[in-house]
Structures are given as structure tokens and as C-alpha cells.
Length: 128
Image (cartoon, rainbow, N blue to C red; front, top):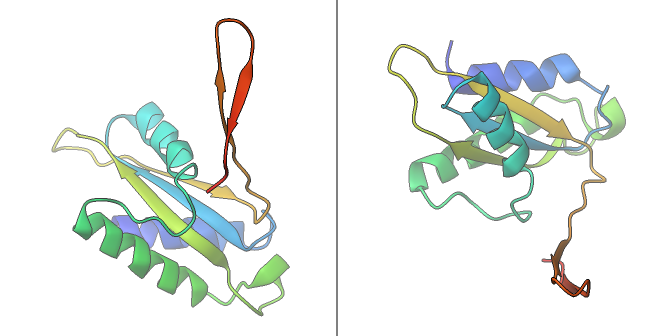
């Protein structure tokens, strides 16, 4: 099985259990632990931003389209998007293995960036 089929199966299996529409994070390569960390890290990339490698960026676009063709829809009701975005992060791997991790985050995904200085002051970065 290929990476794309694995990701599609993971989303289809989750169905409506994770409150779609989803943000889908995918980690490819490294070990089992690293690919899951990469999948979580992928969720932190700003909405709509594509991977710098054009091949990976194309895979993100293709997966987003195919996930939305699953017909799960908003809250599993079959209408609207199943996923809002797909982000992929990659790492080197041994040729004999191809670990893949998939992390689904519900539509309420939020993130913020702050700098905490040694004196305790906090500087909030604007959300992107």
C-alpha cells in the first residue's frame, strides 16, 4: 500500500469521530516515533501554506482533494468539506521501511506563537 492510500484509509476510518472538517497532519519517514512527531508538527504550519518541496506540496493538494471526495463532510453529515487542509512533513528513512503517521485535528485547531523572555515578559506574535 502507498502513503496516499494509507492516509485516505485513516481519514475514512475516523469518519465523523473527530469532528470534521479536519486539518490532517502527515509524517513520513524516520522511525515510528518520529513520523508521529512530524505529523503533529505538520498541523502547526499555517493554513493554506504548502510544503517547500514541490512534490510534497502536490501530494498535499492531491490528498486534500481525495479526502474531500470521501463524502464524510462537516460533522459527518455528508455535506461540505471533510478536510480544510493537509500538511506533510518528511524525514530520512531506511530503504526497508516507510513509517507514516496521521494526526487529525478538528476544525477548532488554533495556534499562537509567543516569546517568553528571561525576565518573564511575554510577547505574543500575531496569528497568521
